[in-house]
Length: 255
Ligand code: SAM
Image (tube, rainbow, N blue to C red; front, side, top):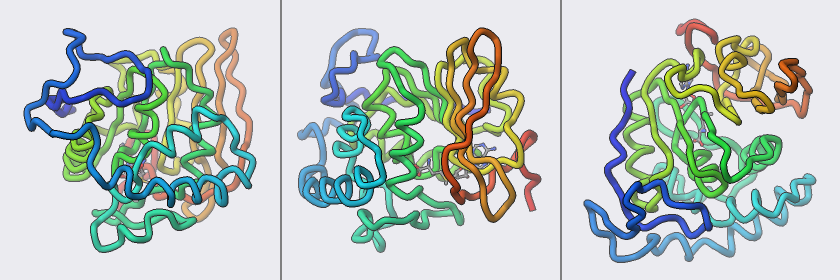
């Protein structure tokens, strides 16, 4: 397993989440960005607000912290340049390596279901473009994100760095077996479809923890909310969805 170095210690996100820079010194960077966020950040704010109103709030997602996190992150920044103009459409979009960035509503739904607290330690399986991780970065201090495709992991790391997000640690490995060395996790989000809930992920859930995961066949899944309370595991179906496959030991075999 590889952990990408989190070298871009640039300005912290403006989200009132304490810095994870041990020196507590914000604003240092190896690339010395002059702006806290790239210009594109504010250019698309109206499109993001429109997207939130028409695609997310109308489908009953109202957690103000989740909405604020989505409003803060420029989705176009996580897309291939040739389809960046489609960033605020109501659908999943292709990224590199035959993978996808999830539909904004699904990102909002999964994020709300996690009920994240600022001190939650979060594990994301399926970094993809890094967009979901960027949204999570606004809500909690400590995020681990695992991606099996190295080039996607590196590209996501770079994009997060460009936005000054440094509380996400990206790992390159088979996330279907979790990330044992950093367990337990208060929240786990799996953004690829599994044939069944992977037992290693359930085992790495802290007491009181929540796991959101799409489970089903290759064509359609149910988004499940799995909770661990008093050492009991309870699974609750949320919505129907369709994700690319979770490939790995506790997922699907690579074809
Ligand atoms: N969360 C992503 C985003 O915001 O762009 C979207 C994730 S995409 C729908 C699913 C991702 O899961 C792909 O990038 C894929 O390579 C990754 N993936 C599939 N199986 C995996 C595994 N066992 N471990 C880690 N990542 C995996």
